[in-house]
Image (tube, rainbow, N blue to C red; front, side, top):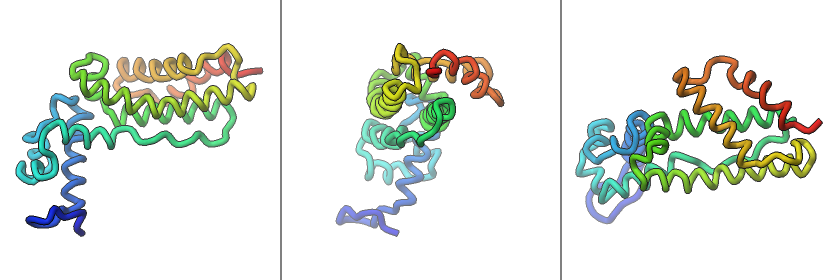
Length: 191
């Protein structure tokens, strides 16, 4: 099925575009942004370099398109009790760091090995995290969370807890979320 046509040559196939982006995402997630090049994406996707260059004039254009797929807009949290909402937030953090950015991307941000990538990712995360911060602030205003809670600090604690667990054990261990919330909830949930 044609995706679009440029007026010359064959029409672009959506499946080819998907293979290119999927290969770039896999390389980014597993090895970091430095592993994403036209050559490595061609090898990983099975799509010819010339075909990739028809879509993306440079690695920068390819990286920009790839970044569009890393962090989607944050969905609004369902109307849940606070502990379950904190669980929901941890699940979102896990999805972003584990499935979308991946260990390679996280390592690149922590090491700041690719400052352009780090800045672009932080900008995309800022929008997503702003939605989560707003959600926490609404729970503070509604009296469901203690009034002294700083929403950014709470999200930082949740992100940090996930990163620490992943650093120590590769991935969070079974039951980790419940144990984390057992420790955190008494300090943040209003009584």
